[in-house]
Image 1: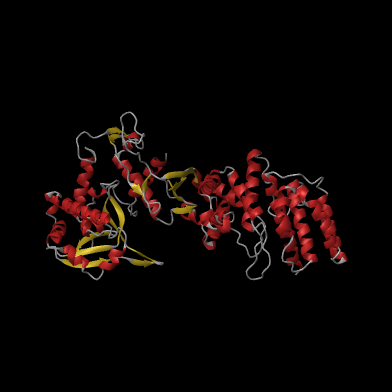
Image 2 (image 1 turned 180 degrees about the vertical axis):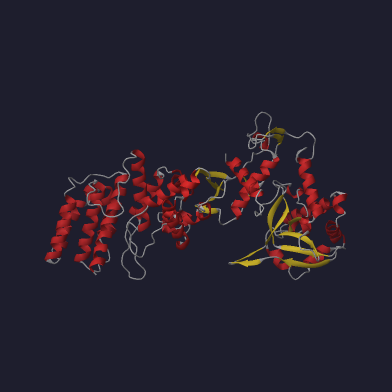
Length: 594
């Protein structure tokens, strides 16, 4: 299903004349440097194609013949057609280590041999002939003497190609080279990668067409170390029925190129990819959507508040226009989550639905995390911000990789959030020491806005999943009718803390700093002490203010019998929301009075 959807995406883009997706046998590659030469092979200049993009220098993206997979200790024996990295073209070693120097020498030897073995029909092309003459006339030394060479030397595995002086396109894009690549594709339809006549022919599991099968699949760069989405280790116990490598999962050569190119194209565009923990997610629709959902889907999860809020607003306004209902019958939407693994790419999640169905599930997520908050807080919370609120020191590196992927899967599939998400939120709330506001010096809440929104969403979605008629257990703001013992105890603890703060203005540490963890897990051990302590604090309050607080305590205690010995995980979550709601209510009322 994944490979088939990617193949369909490639076919759709290839049929679009405005699309820049690479045709079969080609790929778009960043080429930072181009060697400009004369028709007689004489060196002219080393052209730096890089441009400043943000804080980085990005090389020009050119259409070049497709690269080939290189693995193992003999990877130097494989080179590309008329372009490659500087180790092959100029014998540039990565370091002065003897092994690296030997490797660079082998790479350069392979490159020169590949030029000699080019067919005569291709060598007759003026550009290709000039490249061959370049090496015969000692062009490598002239390149290394060029002023731009130190910059090229700094880049690891810097891709380089050639261009004739006066030409616009590089040598690999000349008509003769294009004809040669087309001929190779036709030849591969009749034989395998090694050119032998005993090619492996089978039925392609993507297209269902019988034809030559790809022995290895192209690589996909989802991080610094690129891997293949489909791969089998040779002689490692994965072979069956006498089949080796990717012959175990037969994919035709043309289909392999299509799905690999589609996936790499999606990964290169910021409009079709996003980061989810350690995973990289790509998304696309099977056709152009009338609503533009595929265009702003990535903005829904952005840290940028402007992009995030605009996308969320568009999502919630969709019922007024009916755009997603229109797309429902014709457009399907796909989300593929990929993560690095030891030998190949790991599929973290794979979700697909109609545009209307996907939009509804996302809209439900934002409904679930909606909770009352301060005026200085943003309404739309990104997934990254939610997950970061549970991490130690709010550092992204401390977010569990599996948790991020499972949370995204729960959102897009409309299923309960992972239990580990609620556990992490509760554990972080109990373990976290009270923080101070850097500007005011006052303590910040133990249950911050993001974590409260996440806990509320986890509990509400789990409740709804058990009973579809029970739409919402925890409200957006304070719910005085909620008789749940955990929620009531949370409200009670917040009230006792507020009484202490009112009785001792400017106090550095409150009962929260010492008792929150035990109050939310083993109430019977703490609340007896706190109820006796509150009498001392109430005595310090003015009569009218004391009466208001006593009435509130009576209203909350009316729903509490005996203090329970312990609270389960879900009850601890309700405790946190009760505490958060009551504290927000205190400060909201104060703002209204002011």
